[in-house]
Length: 120
Image 1 (cartoon, rainbow, N blue to C red):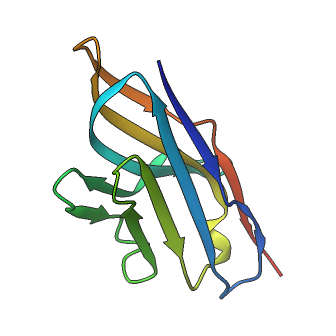
Image 2: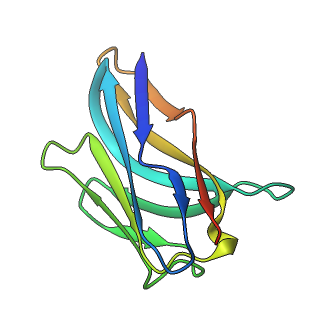
């Protein structure tokens, strides 16, 4: 009932930049929050950044000052600008969204994931 389409992953050298995008569509009445998690090989999935409906943002300490989360005016596409990338940022990045469906039920969806590899 909600589709999250991610794009923008890839291979980048240390110190480089990437921008991830995630577009939400479907039977959406409202979006309360969108964000990004990541999971590196052999590690647990961890929060990267979130943005809620009032524009407030939250970042993991490991990405503060390097990553910026934002959204479009419609509020259904979220972006993650990643600067000064490090090898330890290598992971599969997952988009998340939660809110209310047209049916009135609350939802929490994950995207399919996009690979980010930071390597020389």
